Image (cartoon, rainbow over all chains, first blue to last red; front, side):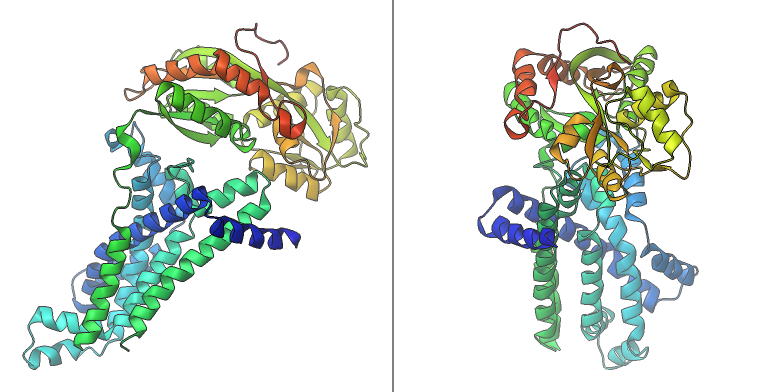
Length: 230
Length: 280
C-alpha cells in the first residue's frame, strides 16, 4: 500500500517541482497521442461517414472490419510497423524507426478503426431523413453534411476521445517502434514500464498518475467545448 | 446551429493546434547510431551514465534498444543495429563465426548469482553451482527462469546441462520477462533463480544470495561491431566509434566507478584489453 502513497507523493513532487524530464515526457506523450488522434480523425471521419451515409458494395464488410479493428492488439501493430520501418524493410530508407514519427504512425493505425466504427455508429443514429430534409430546405450537400456533423457533435467528439484514450494509454506499440529512448521517444507508459522493471514502483505509479491527469485535462477541454453550446 | 458549428470547428482546431509542432522531423538529421544491448545494462542504469558522455565526446547520438542478448544478436544479424553490447558468449561466437560481424572486444564483466528464499529448503548455501542445480531439481523446489533467450537464460540453460539435469514442470517455471520482473516473481513464489549481480544489487528485495564466486558464474560483456555485410544501411564508422570509446580509458573508468557509491561495490569490472576470461 505504501507504494501507492509513495507514488502519489512522487507524482505531485515531479509535477510541481517542475522536473524537466517528467515534463518533457508528458509533452511528448501529448504530442504523439494528439498527432495520432488527429490523423485517425482525418482518415476515420470521412470513411465512417461514407459507411453510415452511402451505400456501396462491401460497406457492411468494411464496418465489420472497423469494429474488429477496435480490438487490434497494439503489440501486433507495433511489430508490423517495426518490420515495415526496419532498415531492411520497404520504408527503411526513411530512417523513421525509434522516432516519435514512427510512434504517431503506429498509434494512428490503432486509433483509425476506433474512429471509423464510432463515427459510423454516431451518424447512423441520426434520423435517416435528416439529409433529405436539409436538402429539401434548400441546403447544398456540403451544408447539409455540416449540419449533420453538428447534429451528431457529441458522439463524434466521443469517438475522438475514445481514439485518444486508446493511444495515450497504449504501451506495446510505443515500446516497439519508439524503443523507449530517453529524451527522444520515452512516453509516460513506457517510462512506467521501465521504472517497474527497475523496481522503482513509486515512480512507476507516479508516471501512471501523471498520465491520468493528462488524459483528464484533454478530455475536460474537449467535453467543455462540446457541452458549451448544447 | 451556427454556434454549434463553431464549437465543432473550435474543437477540431484545438486538436490540430495541440498536435502542431509535433516533433515529426525529429533528431534524425544528426548523426545517430542504434545500439542493441541487454536489459541488464539499462535496468542497472549503466547506460544512463555512459551514453551522454559518449555523445558529448564523439558527437554520435545513441538510440539504445534494450532487449535480451538473443534478440540483440538477431538485430545485428539483420543489420538493424550498428553495434551490440551483449553477454551471451556462446551465441556471440556463433554469430561472429557467420562472418558478417566486425570486431568483438571484451568490455567488462560481473558475475551471476544463484538466489533463493532465506530458508533455503533445498540446501544450496555455499555449495558449488553444479551441485546446487542438482539439489534444486532433486528437491523439486520452484525455480523461476527468464525463459526469454537472454544472456542470463542462456547461461542458466548451460548450467542445467553441465549439472546433468533436464528441468521441467511443475517446479521449473518460465516468466518470459526481464530480470527485474523475474526476481519479483521468484520472491513472491519463494523460489530460486539465477540473476546477474548488477540487477540483484539494484533491487534486492526478498531473495537471499546463496551461491556465488564459481568460475561457471562469470558474466562477460562484449561489444560487437555490425558491418555492411549484414545490411547496406549499417554505419560501420558509428560501430567503430562506439567500440573504440567503450573500450577506451574514459569509459572504462566510468564502468569501474559505476554503482560504487550507491551499492558500496562496483556493479561491473572493466576488462578492456585484458585476455579473454576462462569460464563459460
